[in-house]
Each structure stands twice: as structure tokens, then as C-alpha cells.
Amino acid sequence: MGKRDTMKTMLVSGWGVMEEKFLESRRDDYSVALRNSTVEAEKLVSPRKASDEHQFTITILEGSLYAQEFFQARPNDFFICSYLKTGTTWLKSLVFIIANRSRFDDSTNPLLKRNPHELIPFIEIEFPLFPQVDGLKDKENTLFSTHMPYKSLPDSVVKTGCKMVYIWRDPKDTFISLWHFFLKKRSESGPLDSLEECFDMFCKGFSGYGPYLDHVLGYWKAHQANPNQILFLNYETLSADPLPYVKRLAEFMGYGFTAEEEKNGVVEKVVNLCSFETLKNLEANKEDKEREDHPSPFTKSAYFRKGKTGDWKNYLTPDMAARMDGIMEEKFKGTGLLENCK
Image (cartoon, rainbow, N blue to C red):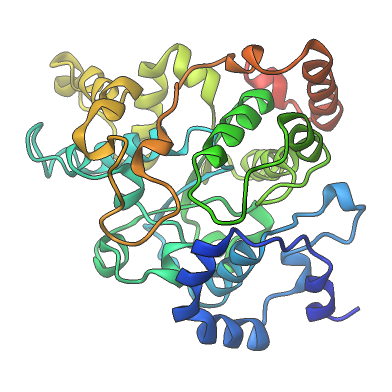
């Protein structure tokens, strides 16, 4: 089977009418990228059984192809890698503040007026669709993000030795956060299926960026092979005790806190400024606020729901929770991943 035929076997249910309208201005570029792509098919879909394949929605597929073909990473670029709804917004705010703390004081920091996603662009979304955003126009910007699986990253990201931080969380909370997120989506395609039906699909690996646990495992294995290139974080652990992990993140990024900064409580200030409560209550992230840099099917408030761990208990039955836990334990057995989070 050829590359283009293989791509046709993927799950390609689009994001909805709004995204399709946004896509039109870049459709020709996408078509050229898809037709002329030199990316191997295996970068997009595994030859293994369906539950192990990374299946993309059409917009994500096209954006990922475009990034693979045209995004050129630099050695000093830094990437925030994650699956949807695993702490990306929080991690973006931490990374931005850490990297830019010498440039802005507490009153001038852009995070106070801009949503974290407006400050650090996704290479498979903003790069192909909205090249006018500040993070792409500013050639001095070195901060980028992606939800792409590790094996689907552009070669330049991996081969140039860019540093990456990956965050993951309990799949039960990931699912519930995803469920609520897409309930807030402004779409003409109608309501979601029931929670039970969506949960079944999630357990079977059908989601926008492919099976969640395979996504996590891909980055975990890459971290094990290259621990100096990829920092691996757990949302629950970071939430329980953020200070040591924020210091570790800063050191990994090359922006370690000085002894004087630690003495003056700068680490605590960073954590407080990036806390869920602070970000959610900023005027820039209120319910009716739209993105300023490009259209989006979500208002800014959609990225701030509860920020709590264990909320799945309010939605999933014991049988549903046991099913997900069993899938996770089987998937991660012998990898050392679960032990790493204890």
C-alpha cells in the first residue's frame, strides 16, 4: 500500500464547520504539502494493529504533514509536548514565565493580558494555518508546542537536539477534561455522543491525536533513550508539589533560578502567577473573551475548568474506572512509567 493510500485508512472525521472555514485559506498549501510530502507513511500511521495506530482528524493530519514538511527547528528551540487536556495551558504559562522572567516585571508580563496559547504557538495548528501570530512572526521566539505523537514530530525537531518537556496525567481525568472541553466547542456539527459512548471510543484509542496511552508511551520511551533532551512530567505530581518541579523545569530549560532568586521567593511567585486560580480569574481569560490573534472554536475560558485531580470520580462508574485502569496497567507494564510517578 502506498503512502497516500495508507493515509486514507486513517480516522479523518473533521473538527467541524468552523475549522473547515478557517482551513480554506491554506487549502492549496496543504494540498501541495500532502502531494509532495517526503515524509514516510510510518511517521503518520503504524503498521501494527488498529489500536496502536496514531489516527488523526483531517485538520490535524494536514497540519501535521505541513509541519513535518516545512517546519525547521533550531537547536535552541524549546518544545512543550503533550496530549490534549493534560496540563498544556498550565505548562505553557510556566515555561513562558521562566524563559522571560528577566524581560518583564509583574505588571508588564504578557501572561496577564494574553492567553498562554497565544504566547506559545502549536506547530501543527498556528504554523500551517495562522502564520501571522506573534510567536511565529518573532524570529527570536524559541518556544513552541505540539500535541503530535513523538514519532510524528518533524525530523528537524528530533535531529537538531531541541529540548522538550512532556506532561501527562491520569487517563480518566484526561478523558473527563476532554469531554467537557468539547462540550464547550462552538460547532454546527451537533452535540457529542453520550459520555458512555465517548468513553468507549477513548478506551479504544479513537481520539484526535490517536490513542492517548500510546502517545504517552512514545514520549516516555524517547525520554528514557534521551533523558537530557526530554523532561517527563506528571500532572498529578506537579500539582501536589509544584516548587521542586518548577525549579527542575527551569534548570532543564537553561534558565535555572539563582540562589538570590530562590531567597527572594521568585520560584513561589512564578508558581502563584501561573496557578489555575490566577490564570482563570484574569480578565483575558474570562468567559466571553475571543482569541485576538486568530479565530477559534473555543473561547479563552474553555481552557480553564477546574484544574483539579480526581474529578473523574464525579462522572465515571467504578466499572468504567476499572476498565481504564486495566488498559493503562497493561499498556505500561514493564516500562517503569507508573513507578516513575510514585
